[in-house]
Image (tube, rainbow, N blue to C red; front, side, top):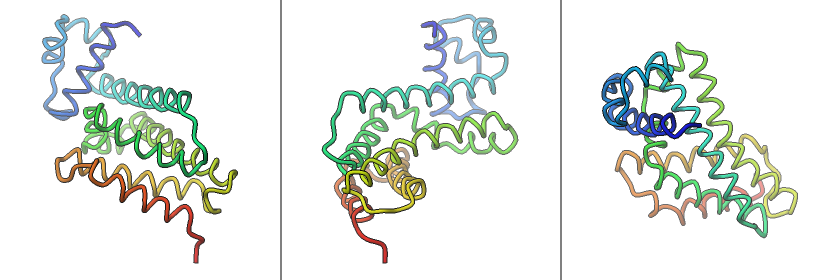
Length: 196
């Protein structure tokens, strides 16, 4: 992707995350990136098109970060991998605050109600993120570090817990780093306890 186009996406991510969809203008984006307004409209015909491109970019960047993490890190077990995934997810939320803030705003979900492309994009983002957690569960069941459970449902529950902590952090209600030990302990109990 061209550097000018990437710069537009990065700046748009910050604007949409901090100001919201309605209060972000294409003129402001052009000014912020030092490009002509026509250049913005050359790449993205409407603000909604730009918004969808931002969501796609967020997904690609998050998946790329996790792929790199998995390539560079070895885990003794699936349970250890899950702990690593939780820690890395919180780390990503800290260093890429605007990506997560964008996903935690209300607008993408409103837009998804009327725009099937937006709905599909959000589903893809959350499926990719849930896949990351599910991957650790599958490996853990194979190596015996995780008890038998419904892979996808368990991954969704753990992902929801972790992302819930990130949301608290996003809105400055609670600092996510202070909950990591409890989050990992709760996840360990869930994955190693036999169901009743």
